[in-house]
Amino acid sequence: MPTPLDTLTRWPAEAIWEAVSPQLPGFSVEILPEIDSTNTELMRRARAGQTDAVLLVAETQSAGRGRLDRKWVSQRGDSLTFSLGLPIAPKDWSGLSLAVGLSLAESLHPQVGLKWPNDLWIDGCKLGGILIEAASTGGHSYVVIGVGLNIRPMHSESADGLRTAPAALSEWLSGITAANALGRVAAPLVAAVQGFALSGFAPLQTRFHARDVLQGFAVSTSCGVQGLALGVDARGALQIETPTGVVNVNSSEVSVRPATQQENN
Image (tube, one colour):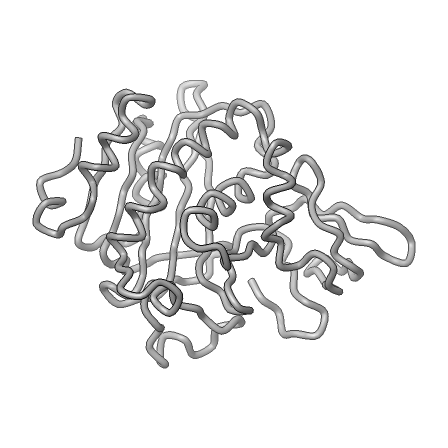
């Protein structure tokens, strides 16, 4: 069930719960005014044996983090930060971050593109990112999917030092708020992750290609692979054409950047 704070802050928690709970009994929505990190909190709970299906939203994160432990800094209302915790056990975890990104992009705007493996881009700028962590307790697997989306233009001091210029959803959807954006993405995301758990990434490959911002461009990876990005395969691996042949890049710890730019996460 939604928490009491939801009504006060006008978050669409009840509507999300009503949309999701028939297909996911026991699902709950929690809205917090502030926390260190929604991902950190759900991983703490998982390690303590709490592996219920939950959507945890924070208006402000004091220690938000992205992939490779990079910090996510924002003021209240500037961004949407949430984590989705689900007890799932897919046969193959490969491509989950791509499935999550695809769901978010399709729910937000036709111009939102996807940069392998976990970023949302629009007009050459970074709109948001995804951080996926997994826990195993009592023989059961549990996934925590963290999402951060820029809603309003980032303050100059917050943008300093970023490798990629930040985009803001409000520049593309007039009047959009963090609560509005959550209402757009939450229920479709739960359905997308459930679908991934059953069928994997392969059925999504064509749709991902339609939003792939790297395909057809020269890229360089942090593991030293350079070449032409050809897209992703049926398991979500990035395919790069090199002088010695096509290389599949699978590691979630690999950063990829257009060859002519500074490193972009």
